[in-house]
Amino acid sequence: MSDKPTILEAESLYHVYESKAEDGNVVALRGLHVNVKAGEAVAVVGPSGSGKSTLLKCLGGLMKPSAGKVSLDGKNMTRLTGLELVELRQKTVSFIFQEGNLLPHLSALDNVAQPLRHQKVSPKEAKRRALELMTELGIEHRAKGLPSMLSGGEQQRVAIARALITNPRLILADEPTGALDPITSREVLKLFKDLHENQNVAFLLVTHSKEVAAFADRSLELRDGRFVAEHGTDLDIENLSEGRELIIDDLGTVTLPPDILTQIGGPGRYSVGEMESGKLSLLGESISSMGELVLASSCPACNHDYADSDDQLCPVCGASRPMVEAQK
Image 1: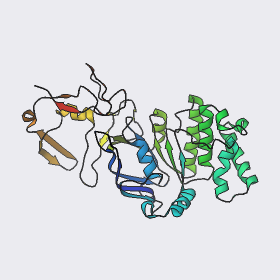
Image 2: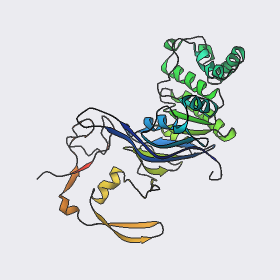
Image 3: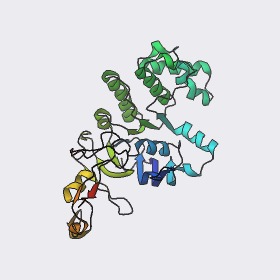
Image 4: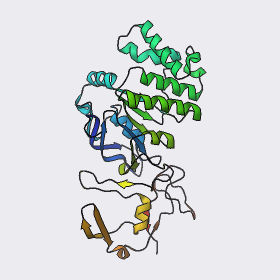
């Protein structure tokens, strides 16, 4: 995979949502680096609220990052005009949104055919190819239905067909099987696998699904706007501590997942102990001077009260539970 060209790359990617709230602005992405090779499938996993959907929009040119660089097929998207960006996306990438994002006034068939019409394909040929793809996804009988007449799963299959019809080299997907039943989900993943293995299509998928993550060649664990670890194909999405490889970025920064931070005693100052190639030990120096560290009693993001639980993630918003100094 390493000898293949890069289809998607991001360097030092930041995104800040401005807010007039008392807590100030929200930093959604914190200096991320991403590299997806042609024909590679990469999953992005992590708790809700960690920045996954924001990352996908920035990588696809749907949202301009606050800082950093995003390159698609070797072209810096942050430097392109609006028309140049549209043309590049049409030739290279397709999107599958969690909500479907279908045009409400068009039939399912016309929704699927619409990207081809933008590429000047004749209406007859566009509809023929659209119906062919809808048949492959088992929704040809709903071709004349408006989105409002379709179930959530049917809408998602229409959205997937629309994304695939232009034969993209890269597919960006946000929970692509989230609205599908298990059988349809497996059929969609089978189609993804065929595109991936036989047509060299690259994928970047945001997911909470074990099956979708297993489809990927590797998975990146995102927490609080930072990549903290990488996982292989044996990822257990319900227990991300298994098989985790921590990431040190180009600036030498490493972010410890909350469960590891808790195990070593929480934040503090550490001295470097034994060090050799591929191995580094840290020795806690002055944690005691900071006072005893305990899990926060409430979520700093949504104020959820943890009560007596030992949860590492907020059950309401999915934010990581920080360590704080115990009140004396």
